[in-house]
Image (cartoon, rainbow, N blue to C red; front, side, top):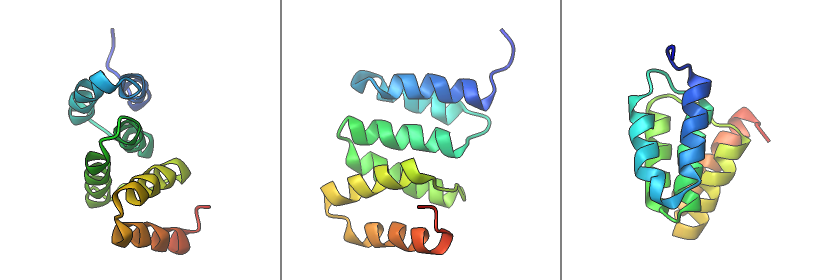
Length: 105
């Protein structure tokens, strides 16, 4: 099999992140990715939110910001859901400001 492209990596991560027990493997794949897209980050954030690991979802989001990743609508919804459940008002406002600045909704 040839070299995997970002789409192939994203498909594998998305599939694994839908299974609670496979988030660790999804993270290992994510960490090995030579290149990440907004969909890569979002798949991980969504996976953590869906399995209830909200702190890790927020940590992943802050890592995404540090890597200068961009948000899309799905990322915003996932992060805001985690913020709401955790009561992370400051981060929620920061995401809201991002929305106002880049008008992605």
